[in-house]
Length: 413
Image (cartoon, rainbow, N blue to C red; front, side):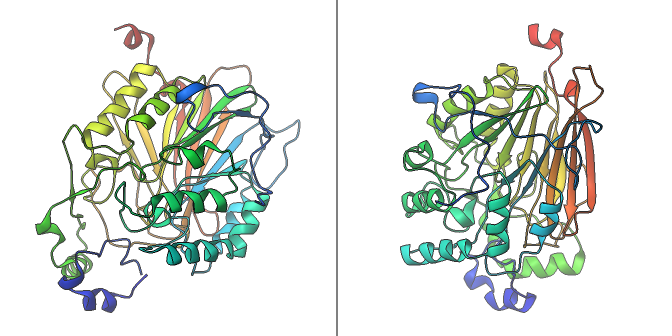
């Protein structure tokens, strides 16, 4: 993270390339449990195939499961880990004993405009031993965001995206015949079975096909002055991106939309959608789904019309942690737990009309615990927690699966 004097030196002349995040200052032993069922989606919509895995659900953090403790499936998640910085947080995450860790993007910082730099940054990532040791010991899934895709706020126009796809798949141990190597994007999903319930993790690719962001030039000018004013005033700092209402503006691309609809129709009790940028946040002016209002509305409608229950978003990118939610007409609230970063911290307030917690401006990771409410009952509890570098929960929210379902009268309306 640059110091404030670095920001001021950059000045207005560098505003075209500066962003908030830039100014902050096949051995995969930890791979997922062996699949026990054939892919549930086949043909052109298979994309990155969904499989069922049955890892042993843990009982409580730091203790093995036994017959006297209630079952629980723990998913930890996080984003934004700069490979040049120390990463002590993996100790606390390991001590939390997640059944799965979801890497939500910016898993390294490439910021590359040429092939040599992109390759070098991935080599540096693979040399971060605390991170790689964690990967060897813990089941995990990964998606990318802009910095490990290639460069700040990049999308479909990034010139090295095919190379980036290859390097990502190499680094994350994707086999030679993996659909993630062939598709227009590295989107993937996995279904886990624990205590007789099905937990789906969906990781869409928000970079490979995404339309260029729309900028308000008046907001982007003299970025260093914006930072200084925010620091002096303590007022929220709005970014320079504005919503793009055009029908052709897209985040996912049509092929991925068809894949995502198929995934939302896969039988599952709980669906965790790992979004590399925030889904529920509004009004920030930084990267988020709200910059593409038609795409965001399409996903909300798709969740509603497919009858997908138990959807919760896990997001990264922002260099702070928070909980947000958006109300859905004819549906249920969509919660978004943002965890960022594993090394990166942004301590200037930003606006978010849908914020539902305090902001954690410190190194952090997230946890979702999925557990039966009472033995013999159909309901599940989802406990969201945003934790500091020592594993202490600083923001929490309990959700019931019964509150993440459409009521029968709404389904038939």
